[in-house]
Amino acid sequence: MQQLFKKNPALATGILLPVLLVVLFSLAALVPKIFVSKPQYDLLFSMKSYSMQGDYEYKFDVDEGKLKIKL
Image (tube, rainbow, N blue to C red; front, top):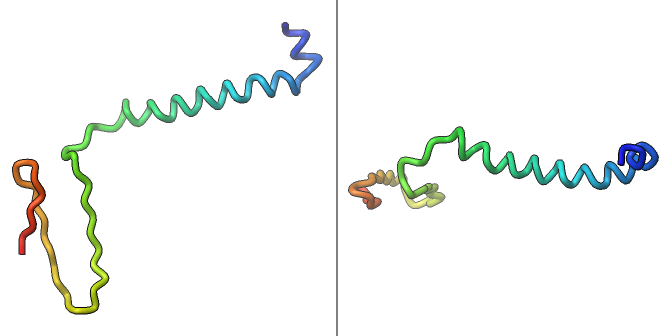
């Protein structure tokens, strides 16, 4: 087997490179799950107003698991 790879390095590269890439992508998917804590809320909310009518400020709060607006 080793002689085959020594005689054909392109064949060895063609076989080992996809296997290595699968392993790397699998690790890249698993590492954040191990080192990052779970989110505090099940919601991601972002708002940007581009209105030229006025300068309104909205404040939001999460109360008992629900998003509420404070005027």
